[in-house]
Amino acid sequence: MYHSIFSRVLLRYCTSVCGRIELKPGHKSQRPFTHRSCPIPFSPYSSGRTRVYAGDGAVRSEKQIECPEECDVLVLGGGAVGSSVAYHLLQRARRDLRVVVVEQDPAYTKASTVLSLGGIRQQYTVKENIQLSLYGAEFLRNASSLLAVEGQEPPDVQFRPQGYLLLAPEDKVELLRENFRLQVETGAKVQFSTATQLKAKYPWLNITGVGAGVEGLENEGRFDPWGLLSGLRRKATSLGAEYVRGKICGLNKRDQGEGAPAALTSAEIHFPCGTRRSIAFKRVVLACGAWSGQVAALAGIGAGEGALAMPLHIYPRKRYVYIVHVPGLPGANTPIFIDISGTYFKREGLNTHLYTVGKSPNEEQEPSVDDLEIDYEFFENEVWPLLAERVPIFENLKGAWAGYYDYHTLDQNPIIGPHPIYTNLFIVAGFSGHGAQHAAGAGRATAEYILEGKFCTIDLNRFCFERVLSGEAVREKNVI
Image (cartoon, rainbow, N blue to C red; front, side, top):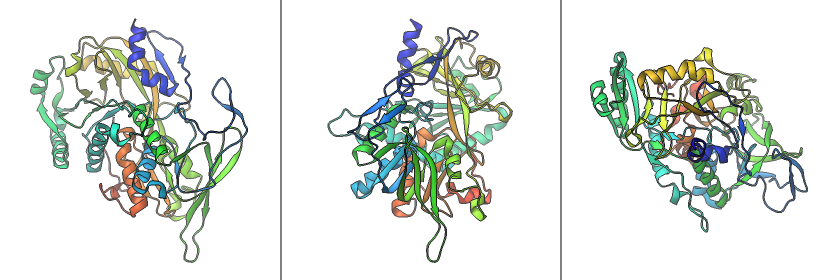
């Protein structure tokens, strides 16, 4: 019975990710991974070919590969951020612009988007992040119309309003109040409460050590990351975007010469069948999430002189998400909770008592990113004790999954904007865990810069690459 409930609640993870989700009868026991298979949701090439797939979904042979030789804008990475860039470009330029998106894994088995928690909040400490969230919430509320495709069912991103509650310890109340003022000044709808007021509202909450909290009243909640990604991709395709399945294995460049700046000129793409082709472009967008640093290195970024000596300090970081059963919490009245320790929990579904919980490890605890295996000892030693202390009615662990952050080591904020040397290279990566919720705003901003030469709606100049060169961090303190 429990297995069926779990399957319904986390259907989006099981069917869209084809991933490794492990169901657990109790948090002490061990059970091998359950591998789930599903058809690839999008054809990696256009129609008119014969494809032969092996049992693992790999292409063994093809009669023909259709790959454009050139385009106006090449987007590297077809997740939520890359697809948002493609959508916003074509929404503005329509079919006057040829946009090609390269995605290595069209089933998105390891994509950060579909393995994310699917939450959106406005409670950040950097103004630009608050603004990106406000636009993101508006986009999610209107996604069914914005991403509608004629003749097809409108997408359902399942946006459900639900406020976040961020707690602060007694010695950080004034800092919390400063952040609260910034959020209100930027347009966020949030409420500041003392520990006593929180206890009166949430009797199940142990307020020992808690000084105060801030709770979102509007523009926060949860959504289906897979619904957002698939909606963006389908709409971008309907507007003319061409998605190509392949691995980026090279970036060709033109050195600076008389009257001509240095620029990237083409990308080498390795296809699943073994063929390698080149796609020339006028502009290229780097939106490869956790692997953006590796792709940037293909252009010599981090191995040259001057500004090219500075690498893209964006690396994969593995994060665990655990599912627990909490029948004692009043579901409809439970916020998305972030403790003073950084431990969080979020209700899954409307009529269940299942909660996703987790906590980011410290630097010494960072796990290997070679796979998405789950560490249950981390739950038992680092997450469970903190949860049980703050909310004593938490019960058994029922399942878990793991995913990647595209972690920017400088300040945990994204790089958005052109590269200072390769000015036709636009970077949009390094969100450090909030890429899915900021995909709409980041995609719009990148499209604006490509088409207009500047940010038009939200000024994101502080997120440009120049801050990396100067070492002037724009640090986001509310990274979960």
